[in-house]
Amino acid sequence: MAVAASPDRALGVRAAGAALFLSFMDVTTLVTIVAGHAAGLGAGALGVGLAVGAYSATNLPANVVGGILLDRLGRRRLTVLGFLLNGVAVLGYALATSVPLFILIRAFHGIVGGVHVTAVFAMAGDRTRAGRAGRSFGRYGAVIGTAWTVGPALAAVLTARSGTALAFQVVAALQVVGALVTLLFLRDVRVDESRDPTAGADAVAEAEAGASSAAVMRELAAKPSVRRALLATIAWMAAVGTLAAFLRETVVAVGLAEATSSALFSVYALIAALVMLSPLANRVDRGAADGAIGAGLGTIAVALALMAAAEAVPAQGFAVLMLASAVFGAGYGVIFPAVAGAVSLAATTRTRGRAFGLFNVAFSVGLALGPPAVGALVAGTDAVLGRTGGLHPFVPVAVLCAVAAVVVARSGRAAEATIA
Image (tube, rainbow, N blue to C red):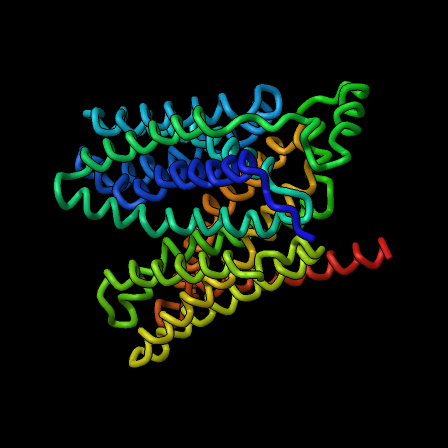
């Protein structure tokens, strides 16, 4: 018979979800206005590119450092500090009077965000019960999907009313709310409260061996389930980044208004949230994480292939793109709980910060390297074959996702056969 969650545990889970939502409202609200704000300060194409990329450039190493600090100092204090420093950074955007200063603040924000998002993920992971990681991260993923739906819309409303300064102020205020939620309703989970029976043994082994944080991270990365999750995350995030970079171009090529791309993103976010709330998110809890990861990657590959094919049938372009966006969202909804749950289950309370540091590194690598790599490949084929015979940007990343799906599925089956 299922045991009802205690009021304190249920409150902690809801508070962790609220913290996750507010932390992603920072990213999702700013993603559509940073480039325009930099241009308004006088930045050219290079300056805009540096302003957008500065966050990711400093975010990636901060993921690693953040994971180490979280396991040493605890989640709560770094989460609160992260929210407050996020607010300071976002207010700094509004006060920056030059492009170099704006870029410098973006770099600082990336450092803070790299630690902060890792902290919130680890705090959420600490509150997942044994056997319910997929279900928990499905719900957390739906929260993130909601932030991706609300954030850009909020940015559009605020900038239309009073420009980017108001948007920055509102985001900063939301970060203060996040700090208060964390202070009032969240506490660090003590190791002896962990549901993972190996937590104490891992802690003793680590202390006896004098293992460094780098050694612990290498040990985590060496676990086959974590390696498969990280590979899948890189491919999946490369797909998300490529979609963000090239969907607008595809929409225009089909003959639709540029604003259609926003509607397509909304469809993808909505379907992803619904799937993550469905029983499909529970597959990792039934020992089927690799199957879910492979299915999610394969579904995303199909969606990207459909988007590429839409240009060949412009009369049905809108319908094809809407279908492809829904399929993409379904793939996203299947894969997120699976990879996040697999990473969380492979760690203990003492090592979960570093585990999610690795997860966020894979996240950042896919987003940072996917779009430029695809862009360079497309440019190269255009130069050789001409624009009409060139490669569609969604094709190479669809192939990447399909190959990753096969690798994950095969290595997962091999691991199961070895255990059997």
